[in-house]
Image 1 (tube, rainbow, N blue to C red):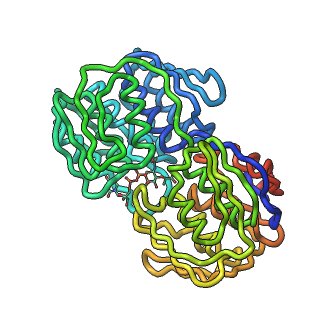
Image 2 (spheres, protein in one colour):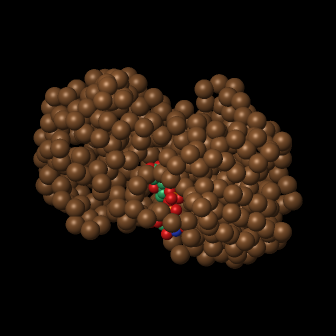
Length: 420
Ligand code: EPZ
């Protein structure tokens, strides 16, 4: 088994370059199998979710070749199957994106129900409602979703809540639907825009991505094309918060500062000194951090994927803070592990209340999901003594070269192997 060992209380200083966005990369990889030719996708993060998506694509007969660590050539023109083994889907949620891509391009799909982080109920009813509205038959059996359509016809689809996955999945299927499809109450996340830009590069006709109403005019087929995945706002926010909690002085590079507005605003409210340029943000932590209230929301609100990391930072702030999780049913499982490091935090329903002024002390802890793992490392960075974090497979799904990047900022962090 592998563990990350952190010797805390080192101040982070220096520059860190952000990788491609996990949640954009996995959707663009799925969308690429709907292309009519070869695609060259670069700035892919070197993470397990990308590896798993590529394995699923290859299982369907898609030709995939990494031309370098972060660049993949995809050729789906000789696909042999519209399904893959459910073991390839059990650890990640993004496999559901193959539903929209296959249904759109090939009018059929047989995809395992998704796995992924345990954040409470993670239904896909909005996805299936959208596919049905476009004319597909949807059957759920033996842990698979089976989709079939003689043809797809444009429709007006209203999402009960701005689901990122449903917005992207329905958009991918609608690319090939005859006529116009409107997705209303659509998600506005940057990676929704990234997937729309990629599909438009291949000849799709998608307008309004990034707003609450996305309009797709169906096309008979797509071409191939080249594309660069956008920088990961969640990875960037993780390093910004790590800089703040260690009182550090860190420049986060190769990002789109606009995507970080909610995080920047909250760190400033807590007393950090933040400046930004065209593709970078500089964070100067403050000795004294002020408490504040966090309420997660769909973009451009505060991202749920930075909720555990921000809650950890708030444990260090002076005074009581509150963190309200409005997106997922159960995203506080990390709190029990954080308490092992000394956090004084209480969860009441959708709200966690932190007492503040916590002095973290190192201990053995385990990641309960991807972003919980990041939060535990952030706590370890400022804890007295040694923190050992297990269950690293969660972290490896979504952070490229995590300990290497922290080491380059001065953290005393390493990965070890240990027999159980
Ligand atoms: C995507 O998950 C991301 N995952 C999540 O990132 C992210 O937290 C989430 O969007 C919100 O930004 C990927 O992109 C692979 P949703 P997704 O559909 O698509 C409910 C990470 O750490 N809902 O926006 O599953 C759902 O239960 C991961 O990188 C339905 O009710 O999120 C949830 O409460 C974690 N029915 C809410 O909507 C549906 O059909 C938001 O879900 C779909 C969703």
